[in-house]
Image (cartoon, rainbow, N blue to C red; front, side, top):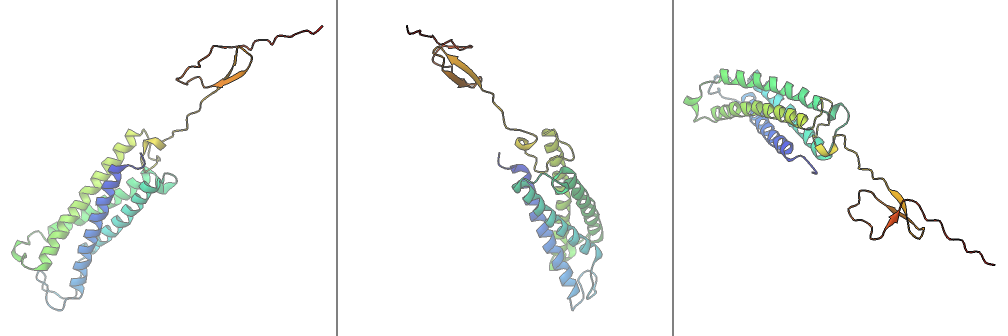
Length: 215
């Protein structure tokens, strides 16, 4: 096939989740930095939350990584360090750890937001919690899919990251030709694996042409 649809769909969704999380965290940082009145949760002004900044970094890395992986899948990049499974696992492992830490900490710090759902800040924080866990869970799906694809193609960590079986060490089929001779001595070239048999009888050795002696 021309491309691997499952991996492409997974990375398209990963890109969407990364962009959404990036927008939510950027909005939260902008609102707390430029807030003139007290925050509904902390009653502070002009402040920033470190864990929100960490999730913003994770979402930016996820966006860039998903774009690169989509380019590799569409452009059939499978050579060099940037085009192998090991590179994909390296970045997925980093995003897995960072998103797990970010989702856990933000859930712990903002565990109870029901009392302030009327405020936009609380609704944004609830959305950040939800998409941070979705981001983390999607990294797990991507790692499992990458392993399954690698085993299905019998590749290793240095195998092509696009994971298409039609390009994993396949070579064009070579066909041998054989020359036989018809009864009249004319050479006939045909392929032995051809399904259609010749319509005339052939002989393995050419017949000797008759010599006419003119007296």
